[in-house]
Image (cartoon, rainbow, N blue to C red; front, side, top):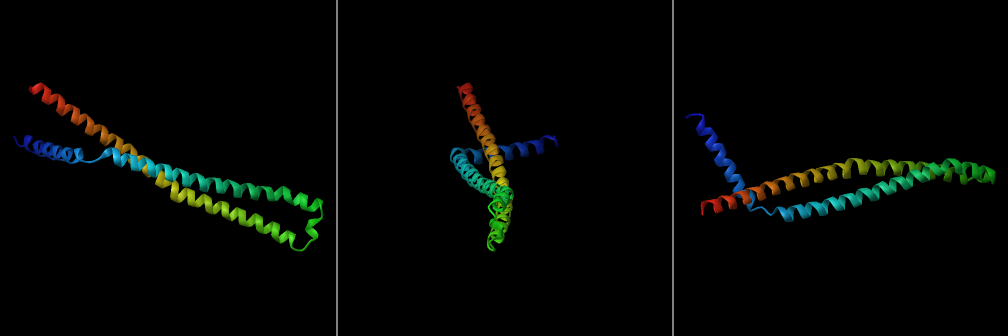
Length: 141
């Protein structure tokens, strides 16, 4: 008998949680999560595209030195510092955009997708419980 009592209390707690979960609007919460996921994906893609552009500019600085030498533009006093500055700034900007994307948007997107999964599971459990209660009511009739 002592073993039945704790199980009964746990069952009552679980049933009380089901009653609380039935009143929760899963559909609206899931739609808000989907909107947040789309916004995070959009922002993350924009940072990723900016990073790619910066890496492209940095990579183009290496063959550009050949063009500068071919046209003897390196003899102009302001061209080599400008060329070096563009390369360094583009590299630092690419690192910056990559860091923002990796440390801000990827974890937030992963968490939002995880929350979406658990919301869908909870909504499914709620629907199963509702269908089960309807079936029990029909059986009682």
